Length: 206
Figure 1 (spheres, one colour):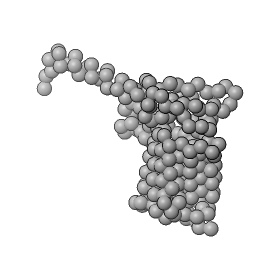
Figure 2 (spheres, rainbow, N blue to C red):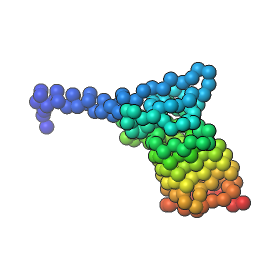
Figure 3 (cartoon, rainbow, N blue to C red):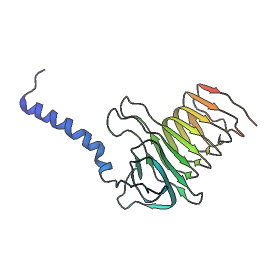
Figure 4 (cartoon, helix red, strand yellow):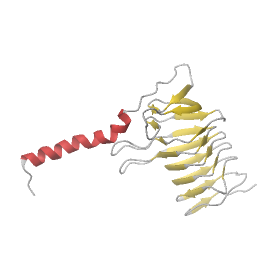
């Protein structure tokens, strides 16, 4: 099939425009500069483009109606809470352009009831979401893998190729884990709602 010059120009224009559509929402997200002295306190929604530790100790403002509220565009981001404020807005570390992989980040000491994701764009791999400290997932998580450390636990809905529960972390009786493999190491108590887990390894109930 042969294309005329106008058709070729149209197709070329679409090739240029489509990536911009992926970035349209991100373009409105303010990049939050990290505090050079250490932990950065978040007060509003935006883009986390640098590795580091970010603290949520109050409800974030979202004057630009960003969705997701927080977009992560760097590996090694840690989002922590002080245990007094729950977070019910969405966080995404999913690849923005075709071929971009999902990014790895951590949620710790925070009660999270929004949607969190780290998926690859197109054929790219997703990332790893780690829950640490006293983190509580009561929303949804979609990633290549999820890891629970410390006293963290899941009472929400996880979709991941692999999920690991370490130490005293556990899957609550209300929590659902969808994936190919679930590895549970030295767990205090487990709600066994693993659907449709093809493999469960190292289960130890105490």
